[in-house]
Picture 1: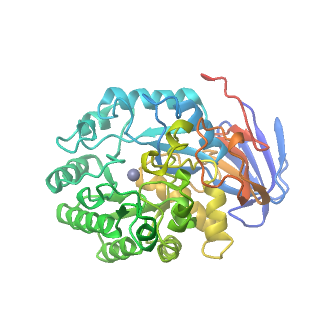
Picture 2: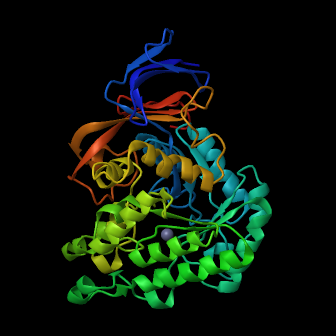
Picture 3: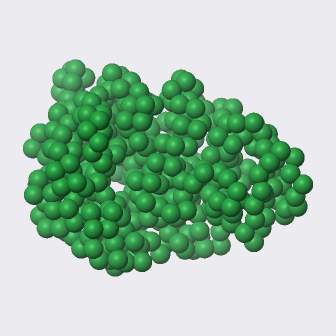
Length: 434
Ligand SMILES: [Zn+2]
């Protein structure tokens, strides 16, 4: 196995140190290390973070390989500094059986770029009617612990209660896509002043908040673990803050796009801004940043949602919802949280690696950067400035809202258990299924 000596890297933004990576682990840390390695990297000016962990990625395989595959998605993840991603269940077929989650898990292992932890569907076919085989998915080789019907809300309170009760047996968690379906029929964007002016169907904040309020109460009632996907409103933050103050086992994530963009962008009618939950107001964005900073929101999760051009290059009303995010997440977090003084790099490591790994109960990820730990690491250059160029993406899809935008920072290198998946900003071929 190739050994690495990383010189003068700032661990979590601290004083420059060297790191020696041997046999997949951190073999030595210190200033001016006297060590031999096959490859030496000058990391002057680079920050070292633990490999990022995404709780919310759509890899689209099986079924929509025209949008993304496990291979292209994990290559995009590596380029973004991720060493583990949770693959959402809304594939074709749906990941609601042991067979499908094992297939996705194996494809991830074979890719060699990033660990893929499949998320199991809560209900059969994401139809919200009958619980899927949660136990069988947990017992499978994929070892599923996170369950979600993401894309759809588990809106039946009895089904949600049963799911929460069921996953308790193996310390699982239900990740809810909080969207009251009746309140969001025909919804095209955030309900507010802009939707009124544009005459587009509104997706009101209360449709998210009502489900979150119900679900934190349900989780408390049955003593189970609940995770809220892509929190997007100031009111949702208040409910989660209240639930946490009660001591209930509730966690939440926010996407990079909800930390940066607002519904004013919809005035362009460019479907690249069409996403679910929708972009909200500037007040919501400020509340989300504050909640991520104070820990009310535990994690940043990308909701990476690749779509082929034909599903996005069309009129607003018929365009698919979602945007890619793996390759720009850390830059958006630098711009919105670090450069604003809301989080330091230690905080970024906590919200993008430690906490998401803990929520997903992922062993080997989200670990401290210390001696003997698995070498899941990212080297990040915060001084880099450059316009986002979707043509350079490793993802199969290009639906980014940041095209041409100057975002700070760039991933210089990513290591998965001591193997470089990205070096000098370029993918390292892994000789897998590529
Ligand atoms: Zn969702």
